[in-house]
Image 1: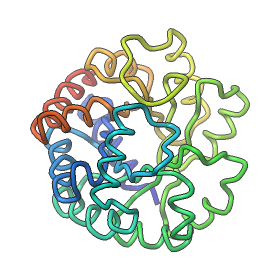
Image 2: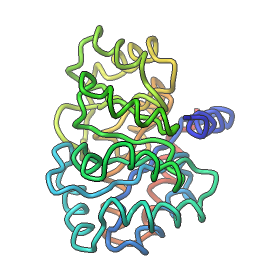
Image 3: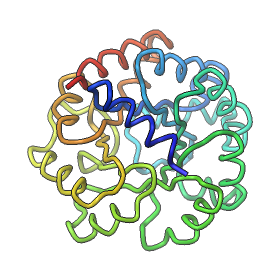
Image 4: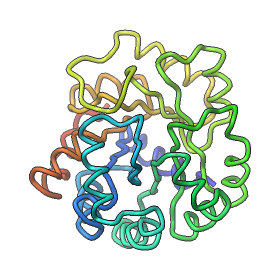
Length: 263
């Protein structure tokens, strides 16, 4: 199921690095050029690609990714087109890199959870992140994903209690996504002082790697956070760079982050 994801973390660890999960929006600025951005992220050192699928009510996303979502929707980036056009193209150009879709529950439910899981795995997706899916309501979707070998990757929020974090982590597939800051995605000048403690707590419970995301945008931040996690997720800094200066800028951001993740 999540063998591809586990292997990516293992490869990064063997190189003495934390893993970089690079997020970009499928369809931003259009379907074809977003493939170039994803490929550039891998050229810059990204270990796992998080493929954003636009949604009209992206409650977890900050201004940079909300704007990317709007551009993608205008470019016609539906879930089905992402699965049929973007994912196979990225898979062809980055065959060794696990692909993880990040979207919202309604987007998956509109297609049907079982149909989505089947299509996603057929196209080469290894896992999916649904930030608005409560663990208590995830049984049906997890069962559909498990049936097809698609990892349902859970999130732990800053406000998640230790007991709830244990429950979430123990049942995780792929990796656990620890949200660094309260609020939405986006770059922050400072990260919470207790973030390292929360990451270490989740790592004690989790049978799969633990990464931190939200607010991380610099090599220094990646290094500090990566010392207490198996990797980091970076989105807004990559999306902003790609929107301003194209794929080469996304490649440069990823290369800088990877330098920060060397141990």
